[in-house]
Amino acid sequence: MRWRPRKLGLWAALLAAVALLAVGGGGGVAAAAGAEEAYVTLLYGDEFVLGVRVLGKSIRDMGTRRDLVVLVSDGVSDYSRKLLEADGFIVKHIILLANPNQVRPTRFWGVYTKLKIFNMTTYRKVVYLDADTVVVKSIEDLFNCGKFCANLKHSERMNSGVMVVEPSETLFKDMMSKVDSLPSYTGGDQGFLNSYYAEFANSRVFDPNKPLTPEPETQRLSTLYNADVGLYMLANKVYTMHSHIDHIFVLHSLILTLLLLPFPGPYASRSYVHRAAPLLLHFLGSITLGALYTQSIIQVYSLVLTKKKKSPRILVIHIRLSFILEYVHIQIC
Image (cartoon, rainbow, N blue to C red):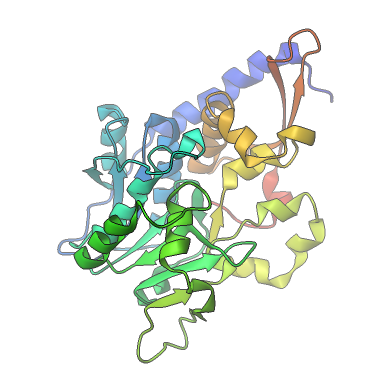
């Protein structure tokens, strides 16, 4: 059946209802008294509050008793904070750190704030996850990793989307003293961390079954702890048949993957998707996350982005629904 633009409104209303149902559900979990370890994420505004809620739910579903902390800026409304508290998050307000880089993507204006997780000294160790990650298998073993752990993603460069950090005031102050002098190839926190941990690529790989003695300062995480598996699904279906796919712990960029893969030509880039965030990530991302949060079988499976000939700035989105789990072979929720 071909989807026509005039039918988009009806389906958009139906799918939006799914997302709204997700926002209504709570199920809070009390924070563990005297917890020494925590899962942490960041939220800069209301646009991705549902993403944080899905992340939190995916962690709770693994049976953790550790704290769930979300660091929120002034851009997060009181309503969103109450939703997150009802979900069991410890909500901590933070002041954004200015980005010292003059040449940077617009969306990176506050990303240096992520460095504040290195100063969360009320905890012995924290596991940080970006709000666009979903935990699909218990990652409790990560708390046994070294003082700083992350993974190399598609290159010899470290990705800051999933990190294990042993907070230290001394370490944080040293980072702050070098923020203006160390280069950042991304114009954001990830580039800075790659400069700060310049020899990270030489770190030993973390194996929860083979702890290293003495504990190293840095360790590399397997790609399974920060997997862009969606980037390969539609491009190479054979990838989903590999046996190691059952061992993935964390899926990263889940929503961006669903939005990005079908885009042709100039739209096949993350920067374009981020620039279109108000339309795509907030609306379609909420729909998809809503389906995940409610464990619905309805998923946004593929999107085709086209431009109208008469008005090139108007984007027409065709949505096709499918059972994504048939294709992915992974139980996401």
